[in-house]
Image (cartoon, rainbow, N blue to C red; front, side, top):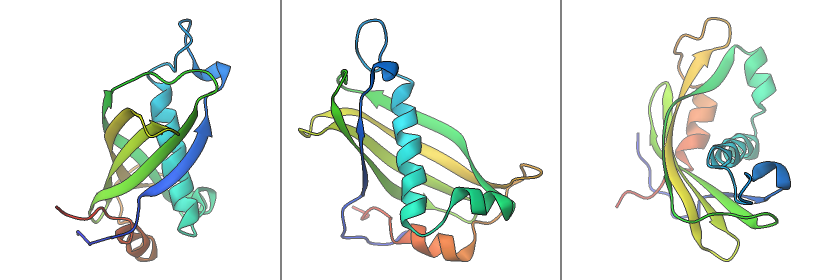
Length: 144
């Protein structure tokens, strides 16, 4: 399912703390994925859904695969802007495009994350709830 969305992608602002950096003083590469995860979680919250409530309803989202490309390092105290757009929405999965930029606009990391909707009790694929699917469709990137 694809939809046109002329609005900007969802954004989450974050700050780089000492715990995010490696011995060289730059953000450890895996931590970009943590920033991306937080942005996806906050996107779901902004759409009116709470992940803990979904879990009690036997619905969780798990990462199936990630592709990331690193462009420049983030450093201690940098302010980051993490964006999320839905690239593809299927019955039981969502492909997201995400970027991590410094607040000055410099692209630091970008990636695609494929997330599957599964049952919380058996980890078997299940359909994304219709109400949530409709909300996700409003976050889809403009096809170009």
